[in-house]
Amino acid sequence: MKIAIVHYWLVGMRGGEKVVEQIATLFPDADIFTHVCDRDRISDTLRRHRIVETSIARLPGARRHYPKYLGFMPRALEELDLRAYDLVISSESGPAKGVITRPDAVHVCYVHSPMRYLWDMSPDYAAGFGGAGRVVFAHVAHRLRQWDVTSAQRVDHLVANSRFVARRIEKFWRRASTVIHPPVDLDAFRPTADPDRAGYLFVSELVPYKRADLAIDAFRQLRDRRLVIVGDGPDLSRLRAAASANVSFRGRVGAEELTQLYQNCRALIFPAEEDFGIVPLEAMACGRPVIAYGRGGALDSVREGETGTFFDAQTPDSLVGAVRRFEADLEARLSVERIAARAARFGEGAFRAAFGAYLAERVPGLASPIAPLPELATVAGGRR
Image 1 (cartoon, helix red, strand yellow):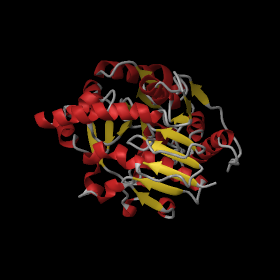
Image 2 (cartoon, one colour):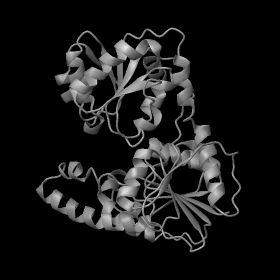
Image 3 (cartoon, helix red, strand yellow):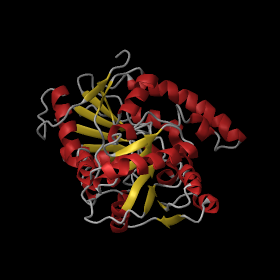
């Protein structure tokens, strides 16, 4: 079969690109289509494929300023000629699914999230613009929402990366989807025989929605516990100024140091509402529990009382209460081996097995590259 993979942009190797990398591993002869590509910042696996850019790449400064061309991306996708392809797999978080395929071709879309800057987080993005910018954004976002819903109806099968995202697909697109969790590279993460468990850990890019401020405010009340913050970003200076003496900042760290920090933490603090969330699984692969906000993708990976615990509200008091409950009632009962075993269910091999089996069931003439593995959860939603 002739197979095309469509991804919004290839300018680094974050979560979405890791999914595309694993899909490309399943189909080494597939062609990849994207709005812009920086070949120096993607993996060897992706570079081995034929990569075709849309017309966006020909616009001035597109490889650096591609978000500014968001309003032009729907048309660029529709201009792609995909008539030669029997199977099209799109990877959606920015505009990718809106391609036009042959009537007899099968289009499967893996959804990291419906574009959050168009839907539930639109007010947050609009607040980042000046007066004229907000007017332009409001107009563009309105038109893009219409296209987003319309283009979702072109897809034959939708796959969500978590139950949280599946519910958003149902809400915004009125479509059903099947949950297949994204691949997590767990090879570098293993439990240590003798963790020191000296303090708590927060790992993330330091941007507002990751809620490092919430963790810092909570540990201002928990002054006899340490919190180590790993990561960098635009909020770093503001967060440093707000932190108490028991909070330390490590900045960006290498893979080996990150593994050691995971292995030796008392628990990971995860206060964000994420579509899925890779960091909790990295900590769990090291046998360490997670104290997470009880919404979003963390509900798919963390199990209450088995691999960690949840707090109910994004407030310092709620997080403080969860930390104290964890220490008093749960910490001594948790099993390092059971936590690590739970994380292993989300590895790259598990993703390839699940996604390959899913495609084999829905694409006539396509044999599964890997034997079937999993239980797949379908979240029913409105009309097809």
